[in-house]
Image 1: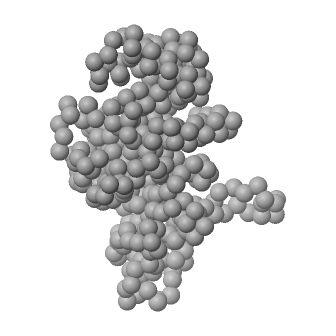
Image 2: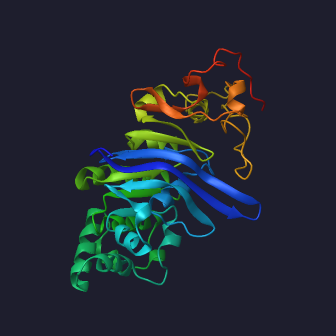
Length: 335
């Protein structure tokens, strides 16, 4: 792992045990997160984004289990650490902003209790010093310090999200994983929140993994983007490269599906055909081939590899690998 890589995921698989069978929500995923970058992780609901985010924190318990892979964070393979050692890494070096802060914060604890507990668990600090640091964080995040004694239900959605960020910053975490942080926010608060992420990245030297289904958010704040589909990494690259020249047919479909204010009543909004696969019994070969307008015979038989197409622009598609069937006529997907 090179010095510019903070977190390197190698061949990671995560399974869920269900009554219907085993669901491989993350399947042989490899991904690098560079120091100081904002990496956007996008894809349809159920593609494995949140599962991957929790796996990076090693937060999964039954029925979920990491079944394969390595998690190299700042030179250490987190898969070799005990549960006790991982508890020391979480909070101190890895922070997470969950999708719904109202269910992540204890409703019977004041906000100061959450932050003070985080600080004093990892550092020898008095209650007074922990409170002082929490008040400084609140002021920096745009919340009046006297609100630190409020309960979570007394705060707005945007303020609760900032509380979650303060928990991640309380111990100067190196990587913050933000899982759908703007889902419950209105557009004005969302814009302020995204500005805040950029400011915090610059001020604290943060590295941020931004998990979202909102491609517009990624275009606004991210440096690079990773596109997931059905547990696989479909495409990874610089935001401008991927958005200007998407290579994977799935990425192309996602971008075409984004509403455009220039559309008239006569224009039809693009709709990607088909549905995401059932991961209890996923399609053979490339998992996108039943929906792909460029599918070839090989796509239903063999899975492609994630490989560089141009510079650091990676794609998981047979269209960009040499094989005997590459020049054969394509098969139009139904739906």
